Image (cartoon, rainbow, N blue to C red; front, side, top):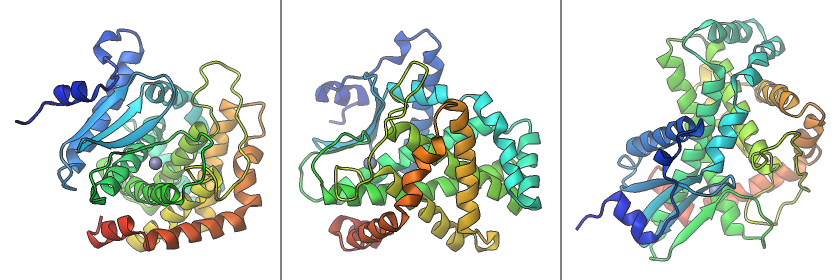
Length: 342
Ligand SMILES: [Zn+2]
């Protein structure tokens, strides 16, 4: 007998948020996130042959996203802290200054930014939020695909919080792979938005790509430096010392470099006419991230905080990403995903 989603959730004893009990402002935010995740599940779960995927919002205020394989069920979720805190921090006024990023660019990209800005149906803040949601979805979905090639019947669970834990190379590899895969999907999403709004020029596409990568950097910063978990102003980022072989997740600076590299390679291969330049990609996406963080944290040296490690440790970060790349290629789970062209 096939069980309904509610029966499965009840059977597993999951602590789900009942959205309908929320009549405050949060109702709309929860509904939006739930709708977007459900839409992404319905277009991807069948395509990748892992139906059903059960989505739920966990009734926890910490900010987290997770993927679980339990009793044979594919489960994906976010905690209720994620929509509220991310939603609140992607407010429109933060992105009004984005247009100034255009000054960093040549004429065609400046014109691209101006064209996006002028389109009444296009909203920078919505696009940035949607890139963040797509990234989180595809990262967790990739974990489910990873779990599904593991033949044994053990339960698996990965979450996105960065607590200190003993080093686990396998988990670093799975995170590296999930980040790369999700970054590529966000590029495809940016391309779909280009078509949807009838944008055509390379300048418009590049402007979307810079914003998309900026959104991923911002999401990472908010998660990794503990800013998402803070409800009260003034916000104080928690610095995190650089490391390589520690914890369950690679250091944020290493992961940011992986995202940058993934964008660069995927766009060079898939859209060679754009002639993407690594330096411009980094300058613009970080420029956008800095504009945003300067607004969010006016009294903090955000450039030093976020990009300090990324540049001061760039050789070690590159070296460690290469190491993870090679380890991933010889990992049996990742090999099977590659063999299935997933
Ligand atoms: Zn993960």
